Structure formats: structure tokens, C-alpha cells
Amino acid sequence: MKVGVLRRRLAAALGAAMRNREADAIALVADRTKATAVALAGVADDAEVELATLEMPTRAVASVLGYHPEHVRRLIRGGRLPARRVGGDYRVRVDDLWPLIDARHDAPGRRRPPSARS
Image 1: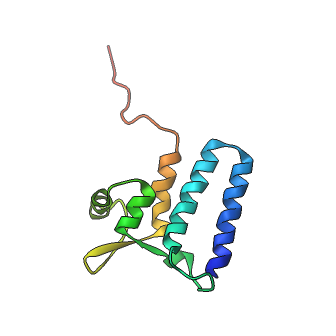
Image 2: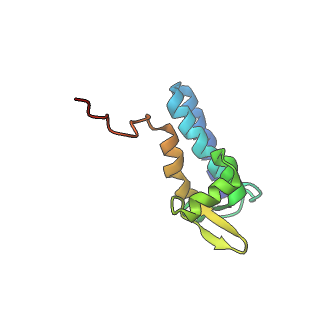
């Protein structure tokens, strides 16, 4: 897909979410749009890209998620975020960020079962 077409689709998706006026939907689409836009930074509009192979360095992932780069590295080393090593840093596919982004917008749940009291 051409990068210019992808950027227009991202803008259209964000516009549709804004018209929806549902705060959670807007936030989720905005986060996904931000992740894809950061991965496309510096790529010419006429370049061809495959969404499945779009990657970002650790620092860009940290910027998208709002984490410190070292926290992103800990997520990678702990197996919670798939990545591949390139030189002295990691590369994370944009598709692998969706579970982390989606989890931020899920309804909070109980972390522990209620204690049994007699």
C-alpha cells in the first residue's frame, strides 16, 4: 500500500471516530493512528509499505505508549512485547503494539479474587 493512501485512511478513521463522539472509541483510534503515524515518519508518500512488516525502534515505541524506553526493553526481555534485535537495539512491529494499546482502553477489572471472610 502506498504511504500517502495509508496516511489519508488514518486521517479518515480518526475523523470518523471524532464524529462518533464516544470518548473511548476516539482514544483507541487516536492511539492506533499515532502508532502507525510514528512508524511512517520520514517515509515518502509514494513509497510502498506492508502494514504487517512496519517496525519501530524502542524509543519510538516508548513515545507511542507513553513509557520510558527502558520500560519497553523490560517488556521485550520479559516476553510481553515481541521484538527482534537489530544492532544494539530492538525493533517492534506495529501490529505487536495493538494488544498493549487495546489493554489500556479495556474496562479495569479485579486483579485479585475477593477474599473469603467467615
